Image (cartoon, rainbow, N blue to C red; front, side, top):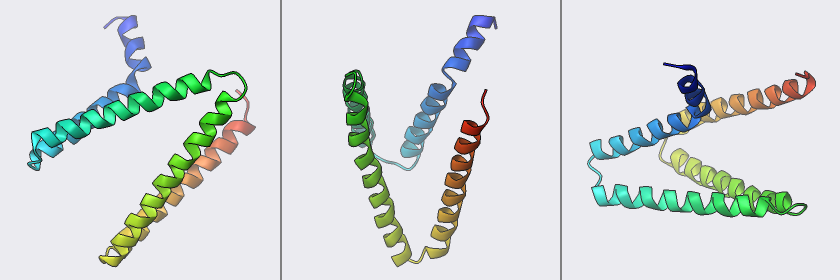
Length: 128
């Protein structure tokens, strides 16, 4: 393996990981007997919406002064919706009796978020 191949692997390591993850999700869906047409349709929809959202975001972010503000205004409600979905699913899980597992997951999430905040603060305090 020459140097150019190694740099390509370093450059695209996150995308390679995402591809392997997506491939494993599709294989898992096949394993559990989900219809091929459903898997294809869901994959196609996710791909189309991702491409549209990223393309529009890039175009909006290219506007000099107000572009980044528009992106922030659009992306913050997406996180609110994800948070609301997590809360609803948590409520359903508690109702079905999965309270202890849910509490463990919430504790792990909180620990991860605290670690990210501490890392961000330390990263900004220590100059490179």
